[in-house]
Amino acid sequence: MELSYRELAQKCDVDHSNISKIEKGEVDLRISTIQELAKGLEVHPQELFNFKIDEKS
Image: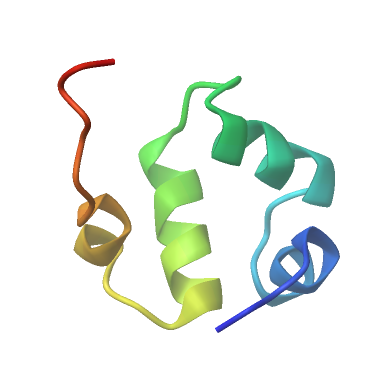
């Protein structure tokens, strides 16, 4: 699913400028924000944390 920041913001209760900051790791997330993003993406919140971490970085 490819969405712009504005499209994702329209699907959930998160400002589009914050979505960019979230993606870049520039802001701390609240559980409520994670829930809103998951709802907008139509996924379980746990899926937002299903990624590999490069331990060398």
